[in-house]
Length: 472
Image (cartoon, rainbow, N blue to C red; front, side):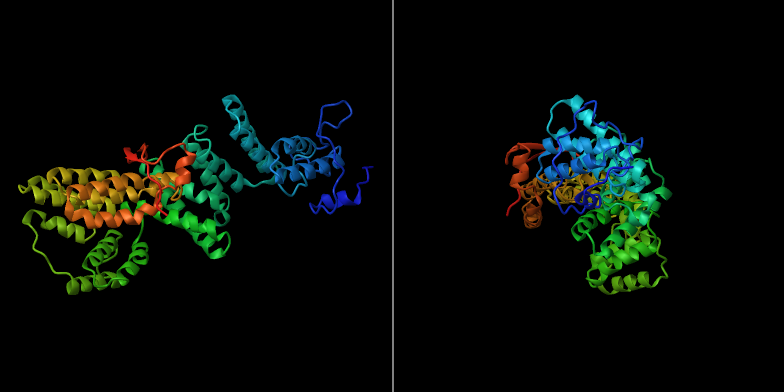
């Protein structure tokens, strides 16, 4: 018959500890101490332990030390609780989750690479046990993928990380862990454009991600976290707008008709929205297209365009962006006037930026435009906007990696107004707008960097810049 347990320990077993258990020293290997739970494997519980009282007491004591962030003392008691009852009460993954916390702490506080590798192995073993004992397939796969994406980048290839994210999403799309959405979105976009994911798979997971985000926002829970996700995911998924046929007409109507409705007499807005809807496959007989066409007739004057570029402008208006790029390049090649050539090349750059979402090619044609027309600030204004818009592409949308892209953007805006006084007003507008989005003084200091020093921004930008801190 099992030993009777004091009343306070009966309460402890329910994790409602009304009295303090007797302090038991941390486990040592002696001949008299129980060395294994009655149930073999990692899923033994308090009730199945060979010494339930010791396991429960060790659990309570290590949890108290852990609350005080006394990791050294907490760890010794955790080892006892974990050895005697790995799965705790069988309803919570507490011992495994705390094991991960211990190993992460120890890893951060050692310079020994061999020890770090061993700690990482232990962390992933804890994840395996959570899945084995509690069946939390989606959560475990998501946590593994999250850690591999952010913390242990050299441990797995993108194929493995992406597969884990899919496994997490597929386990229960309606309840997928919120922490996977940002990194999963980033990998989905990257892998599609690297030809590692086909169109149908990209569309499938794009829809699942958006549906999970919408459900999270509507739930009213974890509002701050969902807001962070909402600032990143839709903007990152905009990259797919550069893929003809990825989104249908309804998507473009829902997204861009409200843009038109906010400024119904703006010719540039009318033309942009009309082109987006046509790019999305909206029929010319649709109500929305007719609405925009009528607005264009009322608010946009038809400009005579050079013969060689007439078809290019028509393609642009009709949302045939790929054709427009080709025709404007041809017009630039045939132009004898250098300013006219520069204007065509800058139009190509703008199409790649605004419509086809290809930032490297947009920069390439902006630089060609600048070369054709020296001391022209507009191409560098555009490159600055490309860089400033790269936060979701180069980082999670917030934080260091997403903020440092502002530095080279400001470099380009400063250069634009230095070579072209007519660009100064717009350049100053962008500088003033984005100066507050740079890293803080604390973030710079914590990385052992100094304001005014040199720094190389990676991602697709790959430029040296000057370290700056945000203005308060």
